[in-house]
Structure formats: C-alpha cells, structure tokens
Length: 354
Image (cartoon, rainbow, N blue to C red):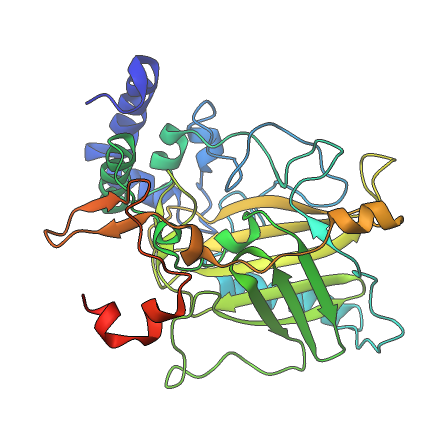
C-alpha cells in the first residue's frame, strides 16, 4: 500500500536510496558528530523536512530559541557532552546562578500550548515522513514505515490510546494547561494532560547511578540556572513514540532543554516561554533539535478565570480502545463499553470477572 501518496513515495524513494544501501556507511560517517567533513541532514536533504520540529503545522519565528543544531553542523556527540558544555559556559561567566525565591523568574499563572493569538505550541515546519525517515538508522526506518502503515490501516499503536501517559519529550507537545512551580533547589513543571509533573532538581545532584536508574515516563531531570535560562538534562526515559505518526524512541533517549521566558511575538499576548529541545537517541543519525513555546493564558477578569480552570485528566473514562481475546486491537461500539465509572467495576470481584 502506498502510505504517503505518489509524490511522497517518490521523495521517500529518493531519500531511501540516498540513505539506505551503498550509502548507508557514508550517511553514518557524515552524521558523526564533530567530524571535519560532517554534512548535516538539513544540507543533505533540504527538501525532506530534516530541520523540523517534533510536531508542527507551520513556520514561526522565535524571539530567543534557535533552530540551529547546538555543537556545530552535526551537533554534540551526546547529551552529556552537550549539557557539560552549557554548564562550562555558565561557569566561565561565574555561574551557575544561585537563585533565591526573590530572584527566580516569574513563570506564575497558567500556560497553554495554544491560545487566542492563534499560534501553535511547537514552532518550525511540519515534519514530513520522508524527512523523519532520513533521520533514522536502517532498522529504525523500517520500524517507522511499518508503524506508519499500521496507522494508515487504522491500528492503534499509541500508548495514549490505552490510557498510558505520554512519555517525554512528547510531554512538551501535548495539549492542556501548564503550571510551573519554581523553588531555588527544585522546579515542578506540570501538565494537565494525565496530571503529569516533571521534577527538575537544581541542587547540584547528579542523575541516579546506573544501579538505581530506572526508565520512567518522564525520566529523571537535573538542571541549573544561567541567569534566567533553565538548562535541563533528562535521562532514564521509557521507550515510546515522539508523536502519533512519528518515529519511536528507545529507552536510551536523553534530552537537553533550555527554558526561558521571553517577550511574546504578539504584543497582545501576556507571556511566552520558549524551550530549545535537543534529543539524543541511538536510532537518530544526528541529534534532533527543535524549539517549542508555551503561552500565558489571560485570567485578568472573572470571566477569563472561568475559562482557564485546569481539569483532572481521567483517560480511562474516555478511552474506547481494548484488545480482544484474540489479541486484536479494537474499539467498543456505542453502548458496549463497561461501566468503568461504576465503583463495582473495580472493587466487586464477581462483577469484574464476569
């Protein structure tokens, strides 16, 4: 089945011919970080969307965040190298900054991934299937093309379809209100979707040791302040997908972010936080870099405050997906779904095991 259409299939064939087969080794070599002859993917495939964001619909300018891949044409060799370079730069200027409650940036209020300015949360051009395929190692490309066909044929392979949380860095792109709670030694970054809070420790601790490191939905995050810029390094993330219809990530993914509140591009907007995100995964032939933004919601009147009440996300109440006894992914038809809001469904064994 042609999953991308004729034009997309032709472009994909060109990309695959360039990346797969005899050119496979050279593609890996040119993607080697720091190599003198490194040619970034955006230069190799300028028409395939390789310099794109995680999830985008149209192009936006940024007031602070850069789309340029950090660390040179093909980026840093690892998240650790990237984070340590940012830390060393801050140290060279007398940092990291040690904030008090009085000096921390003001990130109060509710923040959305969209608002009435009409801007979208993730800036950049829409990622194309061809561009995403060109980013991946051969095995990962094959898996991505299989997953794309599954979606095309109506099969759900998204953990959210089964009420599992959106893992990180997908957490950034999901909708719903955000709240940020800043203290000098720990930052809480909250998302209304699935009621998820990220904890970023800025007290100087390292990540958990390999003995204690597990793989969690949001991973383990440490960071530091460089004046008003919050730098974050996240490890220990569960495997998952970047977004629906996008490639998978392994549990070896690590992410470096830089958060900063900036003046909004729209003069009528109240606030904007831009986030530079660089993802490192063994299945990527070079780090995947993008910029995201959150927007402060207007709650200056009683009427507006009614609109920005956050909600508690109870996914299971709305999910219709299930797996049949034969292992087939299916959906409940109207009227067939169990009464999962009835406490007996959960606590009455006779009812539960009927």
